[in-house]
Image 1 (cartoon, rainbow, N blue to C red):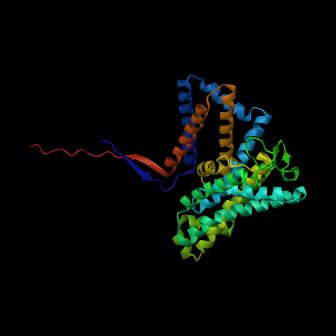
Image 2 (image 1 turned 90 degrees about the horizontal axis):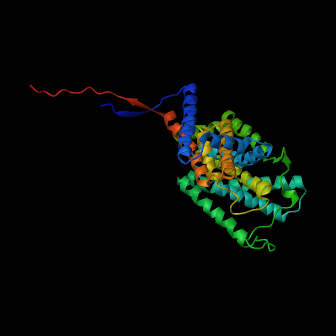
Length: 358
């Protein structure tokens, strides 16, 4: 008898961690290829088409970048909360409320373009931060479950924006489907390199978040609270203050995503603006190991996967369900590798006990 035993790893060398992640990606591609072949498609052609669809031309690279920008900024926001082990599942709502605040500025103020954009950014980050403050306050003062609280606030924010879209903010000139009036040129983010400057903002934020979490006192406090609240309390840290500040920063970054999407992509506010980035960011943040630099690469890889999946639907007439399945298989294997990074499976041989027969 050779039973399995799962043991938590004390520490894993960096080279072994890289090896496990590499093997998980390789296995996911092999398994996805087998499934594709069983469905009657050539896996080599499908995978090369996905890469070509995401990176094959300048326009395709731009489209991939457009998908990576909101995912990256939202992931950085989620990362700040997760670093403290505050499970912020409310990225969707914080994105929507940030977009709402930015839209309120865009539609009601007549300002020069630089001042308009700055006002929209500030309004979005403040509103996103305030929306995140609600669950943070109740968590810090009353110990409520932040997962359920932040999740419920998502639906409240989405329904609020839906109400605005169908009600007081509905554009009177819209015909058919109700919509909110489009932004003026002063409220539209400029472009650089064929893509709106959100990509520059995202890259700057990667550096700033990395420095904040790894080289500042407040970032150290967030890490300590995440590791052990008792240790943080023993060290004299203000737990409530750390929870509230970090969550407001998390919500502020998600709110910034809302502003960028409303200004540069939608050019208005709609109930579908968040596009599930708040939920997807949970996956990318976890895959990146709560590291800001790694988050950049994970989000770009995910954007390539999504853009490539969209491309094969058009170029090869592959059903959307197949493209989604390919993405799911790859994510399943990569997420599964996290188990082997934290635990190891050992085999123990037990000596057979001889029965006394004599």
